[in-house]
Amino acid sequence: MAKKSVTLNGYEKFLAAIRDYKKQGIEREAAITQAVKDCISRNILKKFLETNSSEVRNMLLTEWNTADAMRVQGKFQEYLIYWALSLKHRFGVLATISE
Picture 1 (cartoon, one colour):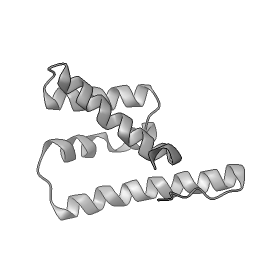
Picture 2 (cartoon, helix red, strand yellow; picture 1 turned 60 degrees about the vertical axis):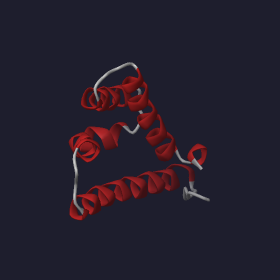
Picture 3 (cartoon, one colour; picture 1 turned 120 degrees about the vertical axis):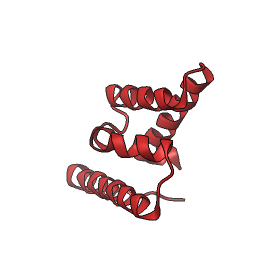
């Protein structure tokens, strides 16, 4: 499914970057911070990470509650809707994620 969605593919790359840094012996917090920077510089989830990097770091580093989860999920859904609509506008098709 990730190959069909730029966003899911980017998410997989982001998580892989964190894992790679941790395998190199880098502490979790530093690995997450570096993965965010790397993904932004490589244009992977750039807009989302530039806007929400602190929430992403906090979510991955700390315990968080349902309200936090809903807020982050809402922002991510807004990003997906924006992405789908921009594809529709640009190419005349509506992007969908299929199972």
